[in-house]
Image 1: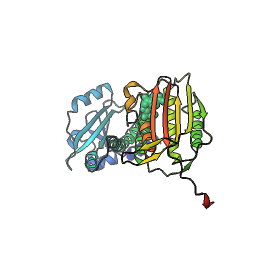
Image 2: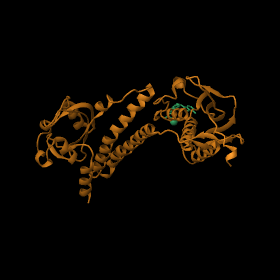
Image 3: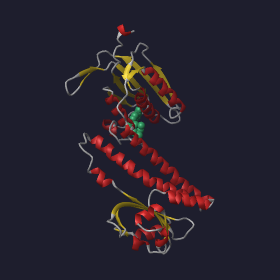
Image 4: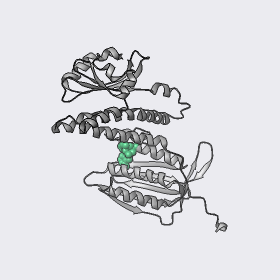
Length: 361
Ligand SMILES: Nc1ncnc2c1ncn2[C@@H]1O[C@H](COP(=O)(O)OP(=O)(O)O)[C@@H](O)[C@H]1O
Ligand SMILES: [Mg+2]
C-alpha cells in the first residue's frame, strides 16, 4: 500500500525529479525526469548523474555540505543541459533523503520566464508591471511548489514518527506560499466591475458579520449609518472585498488581546466632486468611512500604502490596499486616508446609482 502510494506520488510529480544515491549515481527518476533526460529510468539507473546532466554551476562543494549536514539546497537560474538538447535555465531543489545516508532527491524546475517577459507589451504603470511580474512568478512558482509538497509527502512515508514534524512543516509552509500566490493571481484575474444598484449598508453588514466570525473576533464593530443614504453604483462582490480588506487591516493593527474598535460610518456629501485629469468631473456623494482606534499607519510607509507589495507586517503581502485602490478606481471612485495614532480613517467616495426613471413604473 505505502509503496503504491510512493509510486503514485513519484509518478505524479509535475517536475523532473531524480533520486541520487550516495555515489552520485541515478537511483531512479520519475516520468517527468525521463522526459527531461529523454531516456528511460531503466536505462539511466546506475549512471553517474553528472554525466547525464550538465549543470553550469559549481555544485560539488554545496552538495557535499548539504549531504553532510542533511540540509536542503536550492540553486536558482542555472543552465542545465542534457546532451539531447540545448541547456535550459532551471531552478534546482535538492534535499537529502531521510533514512538513506547520502542519498539526495533533486527537483529540476525549468523556467520559461525569459521568453514570456519579452512579449509583455505597453505596461502602463510601475504598479501594473510589478503586479504582472508577480503574476508570472506566481504561475512559475506554483509548479515546483507542487513538486516540493509531493516530494515532502513522499519522504514522510519512510520517516519515523518523530521526524514527521519536518515534512509537515514543509507541506504547511508550502501551502502558505501557494495561498499567497493565489492572492497574487486573483489580483490579475480581477475583471471589470459588474455594476448595479448596491445598498452599501448591506455590503457593510456582510463584512461586519464575517469579520466578527473570523479575523475580527477580537474587535468591536460599531455601525454609524446614514439611513437615508441612496444606492451606490457598483459591483457588490468587489465592494465587499474592499470593505473586508479595510476591516481586516484595522483588526490586524489592533492589539490582538485587548482588541479595539472599528466604526463603519456612512454619510452623504453632495459637494464631493472629483475632477479628473481629462477635465471631466463627477460627483461622488456617497461617503463610507472605516475608522479604527489602533496605532495608525507606520511612518515609513505612510505615503506608499496603496502600492502593491508595501507592507508593514512581517507576514504581509502588501496586496490588500493595492486591490482596494484598483477596485475603487475601476468604480470611478476615490479613496483617501488620514491617520494619527489612535485614529485611522479610510474614506471611500462612490457615485450614486443613476436615478430610476420614474415614469417606467
Ligand atoms: N488600519 C490600519 N492601521 C494601521 N496600519 C495600517 C492600517 N491599514 C493598513 N495599514 C498598513 O498598511 C500596510 C499595507 O496594507 P495592505 O496593503 O493591506 O497589506 P498587508 O495587510 O498584507 O500588509 C499594512 O501592512 C499596514 O502596515
Ligand atoms: Mg491587508
